[in-house]
Length: 75
Image (cartoon, rainbow, N blue to C red; front, top):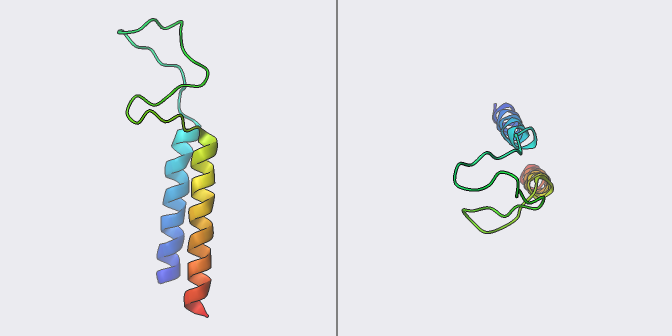
């Protein structure tokens, strides 16, 4: 049962991150001109410029840690 729950949680993580990959990148804002959109935008909330590559790398890293800990617990 625990393995099934772990697989369901992993799939939920993958599908929730998939929405980021297919998000619309065109921003229409009434406050700013829509023609000066940067090709490398910075997040207005954090000031960081994370791309989809960073999110995928973080997901792979978390999956690797989960596999390592899971194998260590079963040994």
